[in-house]
Length: 466
Image (cartoon, rainbow, N blue to C red):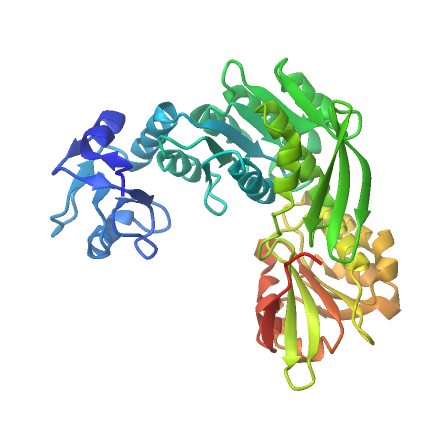
């Protein structure tokens, strides 16, 4: 395997000192998942990475990036004054030497899903490097850049934030050729205070654009004017009134079918097992394709290969009884939630047909970081039109209690403060023919209810086309 970083290259990038020659084929910050040949980065986070350098070498690390050589360690080390600063320098060097066209992605919701859509779409046109998981913070972005293969054609870098002032330095590090904002939603109100402040922070991604870079952003939000003001002249707004917009959208039992108008041409996109909110993500991806000068028909077709992953809308058939073939359909959307994505998930559930005698059931966990209006935002879900098609709503967490109280009595399911308590009742929550949506913020731990439901029977992947 070709070396990603040699000692000579890493020393030039970081200004550190190598104790011995090395050639690393990857980057790792976790000794448990480290692959042979990786350069282990001894970050100081919840635990001091220096405590795990010896274990990293036992697992086959090619070298370690450290501030001091731990006692007893004899493997090659790259010694620097500050590991985090050196990692950022390594990321900057990785960005500088690649020929890839870089797409930076941020947004209140949809970052990771859009990133994975872009993986499918851009992969149609050339080798594509994409951020791993949700590597979108002060160490995730430089790791993504440090892992950039020199010869890949495209790179997608996810950029996140928790508070004001975090996006700009990461964007300047990534230096995107295209900067995409998926949307602005009340996902960080607790930290930033207003939707306008969130929009200003998200728009800081444009500050990192290359001189001839292109901004792609939604045109139909209440805060779109803030995004537009921050964007450069080279721009592609998408959504109502934008350069790329939907002309039709249809939610079926197993797919979302959308028609997008771009430069007087219509392109059709079919997203399996996807909710209405993913249509905006698909539009955003077409905006990126247009910015990069790619064939839009091929791009639209490639988007059809994407499926929602686990925790973000993955659909599964849980076989409760192989003898009778009793089963339920599980929609696992438990990775994250805010009012916008919650409403869209309810629309998916409402459009999904249960089996004979089955019900549509929602298991909803708290939406976090919504600030002082959180109770009203939770209770407001009770008035969503999709609730008319949903038979029962189980609520998890103290915030979701506001929704439980606002529901019509016939739709009120169980209410628990903790996900584990509802998970323990999994056997009593579903029966043959039901379709069950599980959604909530990651910190609500409603994914534990997903695990409990999966333990009821056998999982059958149903993510294929219908």
